[in-house]
Image (tube, rainbow, N blue to C red; front, top):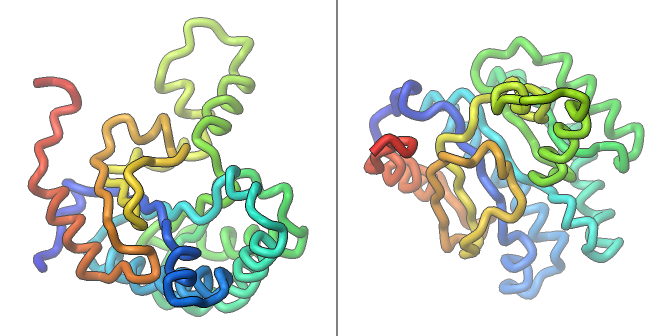
Amino acid sequence: MDKINSQNIQHVAIIMDGNGRWAEKKELHRSQGHKKGLDNILPIVEELIEQKIKYVTLFAFSTENNKRPYEEKKNLINLLDDSLDNINKKIDDNNINLTFIGNLSSLPKKITSKIQKISQKNKCASSVKLIIAWNYSGRSDILNAIRRIKTKQNITEKELESYLMTHNTPDPDLIIRTGNQIRISNFMLWQSAYSELYFSKKLWPEFTKKDLNNAILEFEKRKRNYGNV
């Protein structure tokens, strides 16, 4: 596939859905599905880097996921912890600026310390800004921004955007959701106002570079007029 002009697409966001269902389909424990999904992240991010995409946001854990059984949440947090231990060389090799958005206060302090250390270490990396949305809610993001600016009057869209967690990141051009679900599930509600949406029937662990390129090809076919026509 031809390289994509970064002027056409800067930011790809992915709702990585279907890990648990992938495991159940194969009669495996759900934790094995989450592990398989984690293993699929780097190949997809590497392909996005190859396509010169500058911003990638991955929806890893929503605030609604806190309603899941304790053991499943514990396994997810342990996976996050292990991945942070193993990711340093990979982000160095790929020149990745890794950051997190969401409410991280419920994570163990040792994990938040690792996140802070990694974020600082590669904050000047130029290949791609990789944003992990963990314990993230689009509604909470907007609500928290409003709380911070509640004393102001006649607030503009630009001012409100400056208070969102994504204030230093362009809005997604393309949002991909895997797992055969046709909704955005409280993800980047403000930022997705004019994002192109692509829904894949593939479960996240089965989502390949070819599937990613199909989504990008579909994006290229669409005409974005932002309500002007």
